[in-house]
Length: 196
Picture 1 (spheres, rainbow, N blue to C red):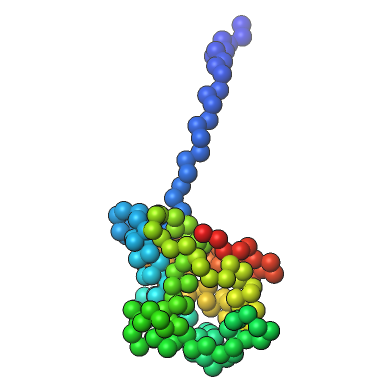
Picture 2: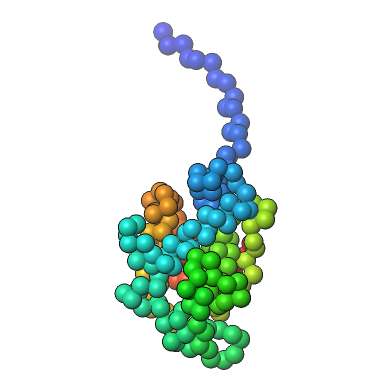
């Protein structure tokens, strides 16, 4: 005697995959409750300001720390800003630093920070109505082509952003995803254009 076989039924069609929230939406909800444009901007402001300024208690040196070698790109020491010519020009992006975290809106500091908030918003999937679209140069190679950034400098920058994310409660997996996105944007010969 052969054992009775269970009746075969047609497989149930798989339901549509569940779309997970972007990193921006996930942590906006976690930290601010509602996913609004204002709350997404508050999240990005916290991440970027922490990455730039650092916080010793959170273990974030900040991208302007001496050991990173990046300060000359921001303090006007190096003529590395792309203003459309064939050579870089010197721009002091710290002209409003004394008023941080709320520098004068017309300062180079404020303009840089706004572009950083928008850039990271596009990178991390900030899509709520009212979140500002990226208005900077979408080609990261063009933005940085006169800087001569070394691998160590780039790694330091990415590490500070990752530490800032972790300091604000982002999980290790998500912080690694942020680092991978930055690596793809800055460590490739033909990076994707920033759009949002």
